[in-house]
Length: 239
Image (cartoon, helix red, strand yellow):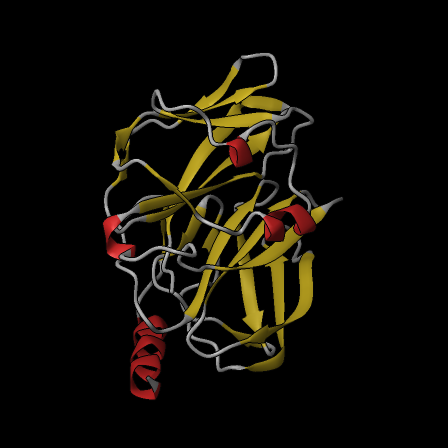
């Protein structure tokens, strides 16, 4: 396990990790690391530091992008994470968290300069799943600067209860919503609809929920300019 972790650390340190919110679905693995997701709407990008050290490949990480490979952070308590906006170097996040060996995490930053928000999830295989590679699972977050409550629609399937009428996430609701929920496999049109039945945004390309895929889907954008609403899709590593 230690050897695998070192391999992950090496790969993560030499590969440019920012990408558009799309990519190949990862297979479940028994190693760990952190996926960084930037949906902070008021800057083109953000800088990340762990223990006052820059993270290779995240200097900066663009808006609506994420690290394709999880970044390995040595396990321990009180690992300090700082995130800075590229706009006047405003500090958005200054927090500490505990890193466990062989656990995948996601760091999600969003909000505005007046109200920056952030939470960290543990990215785990759903309980009571016999074969993690045989299912698809999804979680959904409302990270947009809007007062509207929104619901995720995946094709023609009935919306999942946990994905209905979600207000703008707080760090607490974001953490509470970290569980991936199994859904039927397939390729779908994905859209987000508000409480009045109005479509807020639709993903431009179909989303492939193939067996073995674990996907975070979220709404980002700003009510001040409805053209900025966007449905983001992040393939996640889980264990």
